[in-house]
Length: 232
Image (cartoon, rainbow, N blue to C red; front, top):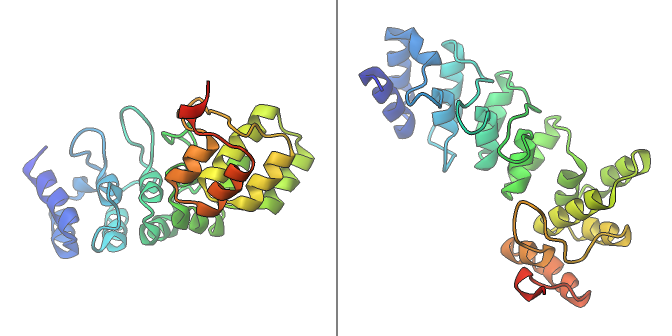
């Protein structure tokens, strides 16, 4: 990492828009730099834990200086800065990146190679997830289930009848998202009550408990749902 890149990262972490602007004016190539070989400076703005001071302003400064708003992480995945903002429930940065032209349904997420919405829903960042939907993101059935968008879920399944395992996945997502209406609909469609998804050894009850979704937890218990530890 060059000294200028170090200074740019430090300015971003400090929320110092003026310092970042001065650095970009002096060295325009910083706008497209990858300080650690993997992340762009836009990724640094969006990085964990998100909601950095002046994050949206810094994103705008970088894009105005020539940063590619859809630049991909180089490494184990191909996430854009929008994926990271969504994963951190950073709604102001989500808006700023979309306003700058970010592709709302870009693939490449760590969650099933999906979109920023896929990340937001999977990580329980529902404020960002709903903002993405409001801005035009297209939810997959499981994502619609997690967000309680039952009308969309019903319409999708009427047009494209799902496989049983698709219903199971959507049911798990509904419980993880605390969406009781969606969970009720999916159980009536034949979802497996104690399904264990391939990505995590948690049943719907485990997922609802982790999400502090008390209403769904109570409903699942009344139906005899079990934790993964209770399964034979």
